[in-house]
Amino acid sequence: MTPPALRPYLPADAPVLAAILCASIDELTAEDYTEDQRAAWMSIADDEAEFAKRLASRLTLVATMGGAPVGFAALEGTELIDLLYVFPSAAGQGVGTLLCDALEKLAAARGGKKLTVDSSDTAEPFFKKRGYIPQSRNTRVVADQWLGLTTLTKELAP
Image (tube, rainbow, N blue to C red):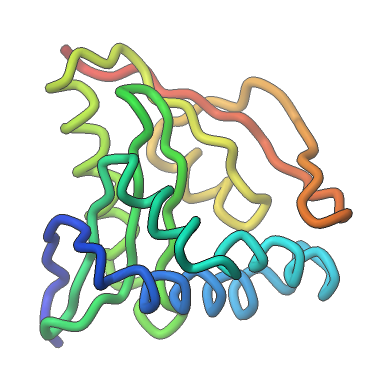
């Protein structure tokens, strides 16, 4: 098995990252969210140009295995994990950990004091295991569907 590697986001990555986001939501969150909620959530990648613009406006990293993208994460500013998705077949192979480690280091290097993430119910245990502390329970409306989320934060080492 090839260990995951990281590289910067390139504009040509948008279609494959949209596919990773959709597969991740569809296959990994089914126990926590309804089919309608997942469809609404996936709609954030429907407009490829807007999705590409969102990725380009953040520090976005792409995780690869054998040269193929298998996950991505985006840091907004120095204190917000905006996106973190892993292709289902790569889940549990260290891809999410590699991406999150990199965002934490980059945020700290850029002067960030803490990281915040609005986590899905599915990803919450991942973040808690990494030392993120729940702050509040929230909902977000996406395409007329309410999605339950938990805001978690982690203090960064200087």
